[in-house]
Amino acid sequence: LYQELILEHYKRPRNHQVLEHATTQQEGVNPSCGDELELYLVIEDDVIADIAFIGEGCAISQAATSMMTEAVKGRTVSEAKTRAQEFRAMIHGDPPAEALGDLKVLAGIAKLPARVKCATLAWVTLEQALDQYLV
Ligand code: ZN
Image 1 (cartoon, rainbow, N blue to C red):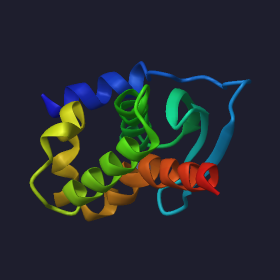
Image 2: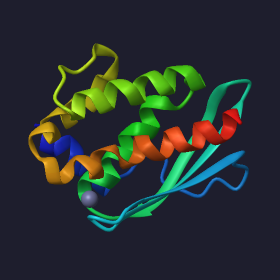
Image 3: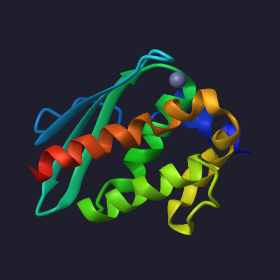
Image 4: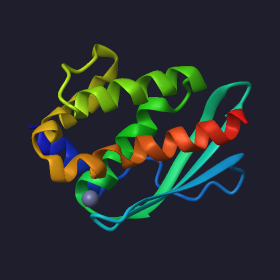
């Protein structure tokens, strides 16, 4: 079941477009697999009002990015940072936090060390974008 949801996000990624009116833009690269992302955010009053991405790479990296955008759209910057920490903890083997919702299907990646960077690329890139916003 978890693979189905990942494949579904890979084939039909959510929020997959360039946002011309982005207030923050961040590139993410995972050279070990060849995954690439360009993340676009519209942050207004500390809320991620809109988020989208374009990219290419393996199914896990692209599906995980699609799921990340769904998880943080409409959330505050601080909520998004908390989700990023929870996601990272899960991918490193901790029991998944309830707030992760659908993202919990990626918990199995903890057992696939070679794919950890594929799964976390979206969140690392998001954190870089949010740090840029907070400067
Ligand atoms: Zn990958």
